[in-house]
Image 1 (cartoon, rainbow, N blue to C red):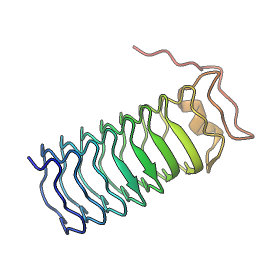
Image 2: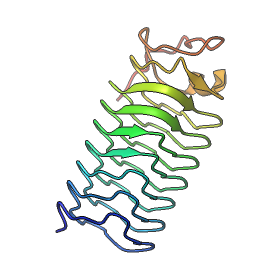
Image 3: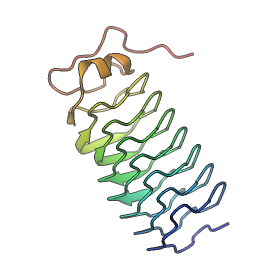
Image 4: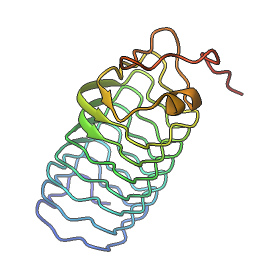
Length: 185
């Protein structure tokens, strides 16, 4: 139980925080590289300039998480919940985000290059600035009502595998497939 802890600048490389309560913690400049955060709660935590590179954080709770210039590069984040998170200049390059939730998240200048976003849910999320989706896997990724018109590196084949609707805004040259909206079980 570390809710509200001040771990600013801490070197936590490889530490095991599985099922740990880190809600409302201060994690600015902390190094969590290769740490284990399986089912951990970082809800409401602040983590500007923190490194979560190559962490294992399946089913972790990042609800209302706030971070600027944070790196999740190469992280294992399947089923992680980033609902209502505020992420600016976040790097998710090569991250595994299958079934992750970004419902209501505010994302600015984010990088999802080569990320696996299969079945991730961006319902109600807002994007600002640049959105890098080069070679990202968007299989059944929920983009209903989301404006990704500023996305770079996005190809028609990626959108053809994703799920959107008439309110989804796409970049120039990319069109909504006839299969939209997707049917879910």
